[in-house]
Length: 155
Image (cartoon, rainbow, N blue to C red; front, top):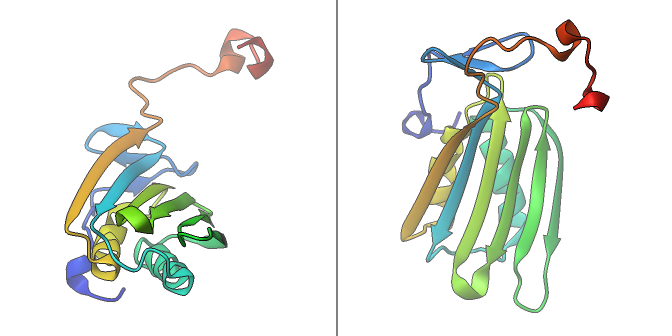
């Protein structure tokens, strides 16, 4: 962890054996953050993007499997993904509009909210729009398909 103030604290979060999360009386697959950076800088720097994604993975306590980035010409935009054991971080940039769209989805003990401070520090946006969803929320105990004599092919 780089800076203590950059870390989001979710101590009450518990991960189950299947990496679903239990928090505030809910069980869900993971946090999904959509982060839009406006009036951002350095959005065409491929090396900086790769370094930033690696730093985000580390501070989120996630496990990096692979990073793939594509640099578009002539505007220099970048599209790519960091594939994680806990899911992914994806990015699409429009340097000509000073805009970047990040998509962070993580399960288990990973904390995607920690990446926001890194993205703000690195790309220095004037405006940031963050939306968070809980994916795969289990509202109630749902019987498995097998308990009803069904398989996924029947659904």
